[in-house]
Length: 233
Image (cartoon, rainbow, N blue to C red; front, side, top):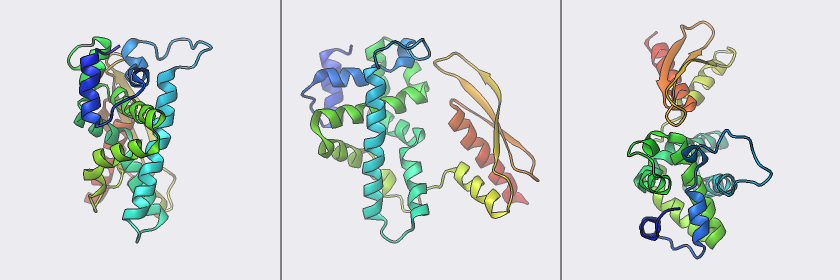
């Protein structure tokens, strides 16, 4: 469990004070940082994973409502693309690093200086768990206030970049082609900091590969590489 000093520092960064400190502590107990994830499950549910589940839904609702208010002149498809870009692991990781959440995960688990920052899943999942914890502790209003403060820069970007995977899928559909196919061609590194190589192919075009610290990151990089190659033709 993090020290009282570390918990107070994080609450200051969140601009939120927990009435129930146990909720905050649970949100920092990421299974991949302790070796628990992947082990045989017990009958009792993990408080961390339950908070992560809840935080994901709270974030999705707040971002959806916010986009609905800000972008009143775009259709459902465009809203969905912006929503996906704002709630995916990459966006969550950016926000988590802004809060220096990797520091508090290390503090909680006694990990080395780089592990938490390299573990994209740990950072993004812990951010969702913290949102869930704040929602349970104080309700929707403080959770919404935190999300709006931390995601402000991203939502203000009027030209929010579309996810390369979505763009590649739309390209294939527009050409009347089957959907892109993603395949893991290599996996290396330890469990806490894996590296994946993903190959993506669209019928009629040369396949492209890319590496990432998560499957999603590698898929996005491969999709971007294939889009750029297609653009050269």
